[in-house]
Image (cartoon, rainbow, N blue to C red; front, side, top):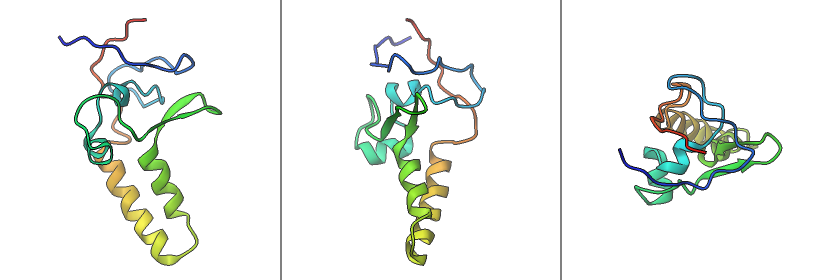
Length: 108
């Protein structure tokens, strides 16, 4: 097993069990980017550059998804159409709704 440290926000929720719904702990994205994160971050290792900390909700969020949601709600037919496609593709590439797939051990 490979060991390495990630800089995790002190207020981040604890990592959920494998298969449990995502709670925004961000540990998976801090450890390594998903396929979409690799494309956006232009890196295969390390933290995803699209990961964002939501101070109000005290959890991490995928910046790619957040930007796609904003684009899908934008005023213009072309922007909304493009945003919906980007949102659908992004959700699939990050496996949104599939549950936690981070096989990582949290060591405080």
